[in-house]
Length: 154
Image 1 (spheres, helix red, strand yellow):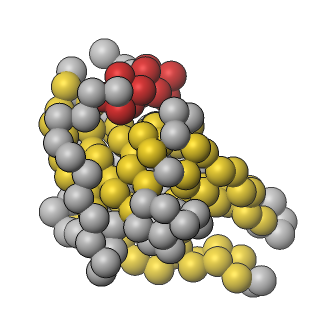
Image 2 (image 1 turned 30 degrees about the vertical axis):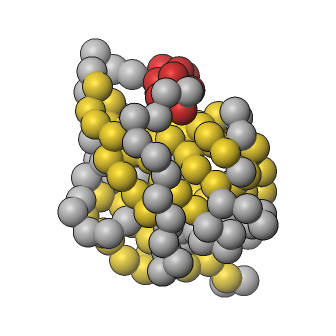
């Protein structure tokens, strides 16, 4: 069965309302805890102190793209998404507790806690996320920086 990003949104909203573990934060970077795999959907809880975030990345690259969704449980998270074009730009959206967004299979984005309180979010991937590609972005364009495989600290 193929799940849509709308299906993933529903799963993250449900899990956000009944987290099985308390959030844990660390000063050295955001924390990620696997909540489990349900009906082929991999669920993660991410905990972010103010200022913590990801770099620009995709979910799976061209060969194994993975749709995703996340729901903010508490605090607020800002997402920057690359808007393609001759001169790519970054679109910015902020999501607060209770709000959900989706990440398409071709999206390149970054998520950051730009607020002044900790944030918690639940993320869903289907199929399981096996790799991410990280990017650099400047006035000359978008550049592939690295590839991270499952099992590394992402």
